[in-house]
Image (cartoon, rainbow, N blue to C red):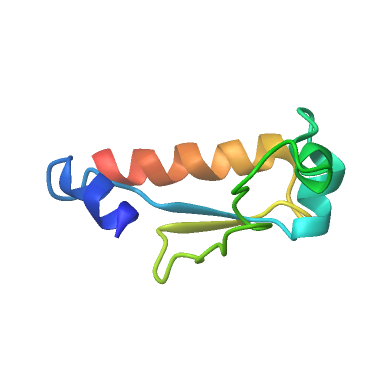
Length: 87
């Protein structure tokens, strides 16, 4: 529902959903703010993917598998998608 509401705020075709597909354990390892560790200690509540379920998008415009793709290549894919949409 949240995604549908976000898409409804934009003109038709103006919303591009990108699914950054990263396993939870990799998210924990890459967590620069220490949110997962703080959640484990009870200092952060309702962390998506830990305390609240994460619902993967049903039909994203792009899926980025961050374990297999570095940040620069992922950014290139997003730029390519946006450019395809504006042409």
